[in-house]
Image (cartoon, rainbow, N blue to C red; front, side):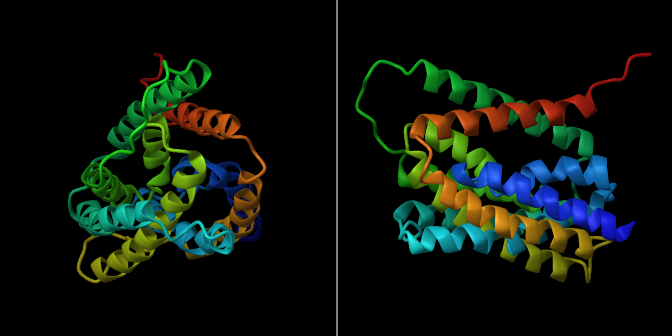
Length: 263
């Protein structure tokens, strides 16, 4: 059974990464409900397992973007500068004072659904032409810091939040995706290290499910490379709609388990 679970994890990681990498999302936010609902990973182990997935899967897409010369940008540096300290704070919160899973699911659903629907509407019915200005450096770093804290708590890639916000503000997906994936990878490495240290002092089991995390990450490594290659072949409108649809659909999937069951 363990072998079957790992094989399913590899396939799940590959499929998720192929679909999410073109828009700058690592896929960890979408792997989390799969871990909980399909593989039955216990709550405390979900976060470090997701971080392990990001660490193993990340180099596939990053290698492709590096070869295309897309990683060395001011946006990448600003996102890393915000998410890196944020993930350390989030890891501490996760071990010592984490909210329950129901609260988390509702928060993610309340964030992803409106973001996704807003981005779809903005893409299908763009506003009247106006000068497009990139968000300020301080604004980007502040947003990345907040997303880093959430990522440290729940082990999700910040691209699932950063992507829709930055793209919705008018930045092209081709610019946002490499930067979001790079910041996700760097902060996941830092987050995994933080959990390793906190496991020595924190209460409860905060170790990842190593076999499942490595299997999902191996699939994500392949899928991320393929997804990054696919990105350059898709038009900007299709990428924006894909990002919005992913955010909205998975917002619904996060909300459903938290709704009260009918009596």
